[in-house]
Image (cartoon, rainbow, N blue to C red; front, side, top):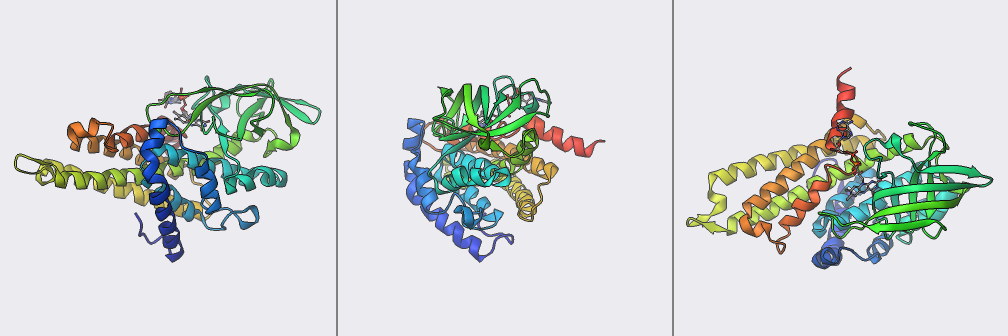
Amino acid sequence: MSDHPIFNDEHRAIRKTIRDFVLKELTPYADEWEEAQDFPSSVFHRMGELGFLGLHHPEEYGGQGGDYLSGVILAEEMMRCLSGGVALGVGVQTDMVCPLLHKVGSESIKERFLKPALQGEKIGCLGITEPDAGSDVASIRTTNQRDGDEFVINGQKIFITNGVRADFAILVTREQGSSGTSGITLFVVEKDTPGYSVSRKLDKVGMLSSDTAELAFMDCRVPAENMLGEEGQGFYHIMWELQPERLFGAISAVAGAQISMDMTLKYVSERTQFGRPIGKFQAIRHRLAELATEIEAARQLNYYVAGLINAGEFPAMEISMAKLFATRMACKMSDESLQFYGGYGYMMEYPIQRFWRDSRLTRIGGGTDEIMLEIISRQLVQ
Ligand SMILES: Cc1cc2nc3c(=O)[nH]c(=O)nc-3n(C[C@H](O)[C@H](O)[C@H](O)COP(=O)(O)OP(=O)(O)OC[C@H]3O[C@@H](n4cnc5c(N)ncnc54)[C@H](O)[C@@H]3O)c2cc1C
């Protein structure tokens, strides 16, 4: 994971700094945060202070001015905290909210939201999904209606990561009366705006320490200057945003799978049955060899795609392939790991069960397997 030709010495130094931070300041608290189903927002502040939230953002907005690959390193190293929820919460800020603010935000938006987000002073969330609109983003119903210099927003969002703690939400809305992909516009809405409420914190199967919210907006008045990107172009802005989000999912999936593999290799060499370590049984060795091969294949595809993104390309088909392959592989790896741990794998005191629960989300969030297959097949079969 740590040494590959796409990374240079500067990347290696960044990796070491992040890894030291994660192992010292996050991993020791993972169990506590999972139990509490929350991690402190001070993690954002601390990571902002250390410059980790803006690794690949320009220095003029408080970023570190690095390349996209430094963000890949952050996504990988965050998985060492052994809580997918922490990695996801931070990832929403670094790989979903901030890239969108930077790509399509006005100077005013960048000053008021991107800069403090990169510093960890403001936490953001991204509200696309609604109770009746998930995979079909174009069917969202949250409306915006212009009223002078303001827009009035009404609607509901569901499954929003960081939604409970967020200081602001990027909302996908549509002009009242519009339908389909046209008429969709993004807005940055601050939490203290009258009419903005967190209606529910949702209970999940995994990613326990990340907060997931249902949000409601009732006659929420937002100044026109909070429009993010071009009016009516929100669908296309979101389709762009989903590309780095999907690769982030793929990168995190492989990093998690590698950690499951490392833990499992140690376990099978220590656990003895029938007079020898279970890792000596060929049935187990060969399955581990197959899984190691799949991890490596997923990693190579991810790095290939990351290299393209680093060069400014966002190839939707290859990104979808990387997400599909890596997240399926990660689910398989965590399931097999649990199997190799036997009954201990099913116990909450062993972290392997957390990878099993956390990895399941990666085949759903940011676009399901079926949607990835749809994107790939659209380019493949004319
Ligand atoms: C823990 C968690 C965190 C999340 N965080 C966020 C967030 O921060 N922001 C946000 O906006 N959203 C978030 N989501 C929502 C996530 O992106 C959606 O759950 C996902 O896009 C799927 O939408 P859906 O759940 O409505 O499922 P649906 O779209 O209803 O899909 C149900 C099933 O039908 C399948 N299906 C749908 N359409 C087709 C098709 N055309 N062909 C074949 N099969 C199809 C799907 O693949 C799936 O298997 C989060 C979800 C979870 C669980």
